[in-house]
Image (tube, rainbow, N blue to C red):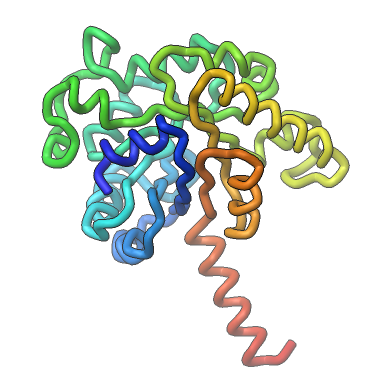
Length: 254
């Protein structure tokens, strides 16, 4: 699937499933990108991936041939967004969006003039995305993370920002934002679920996609059934540890 095809699916709110990568291990990422996930997202905010790693892993995703590479950038700064897109990302997930103004800045950083302020220098992305500015703008996604008290309070205004393709829930931070003491705090489970419904319905009213991060495929399936447009299963590091622990338990029988 090309970046343009994936962008069209998300904008049409067709359901998609992705995988989350935090390790700078391009060979592993390439194997993951061959499995059939619609997208593979590289975590440039909390993941263990630097600039060179983002480039190498995006190339690995493209080599896999079936998934589109997304990048969660470290911030809404134009340099971070532009770098990820120049490396060949099919879209950016932008953290800590508190206001419509934050979302508008992120959109502007991902679009070329006259619709934005992205600087032209697609050293690698022009091989697959674009290369003209209009083609590139049409092919890449901008997704705003909803994960803070202010982001939740300003949800409708954020969703209404022109050019924003979707919102993406960071459940750990959103749980803290609604009063949780730690991610998945059961004491705020009802409040958290109500917040998720607010995100889904606000996105639907605005005609944009709503996505969410999930620890398991089972939970991802549940969120898609509830009406989310796209759901990510996380992550390579967690799954590596889980698989290793399961094998150790099988050997030792404990």
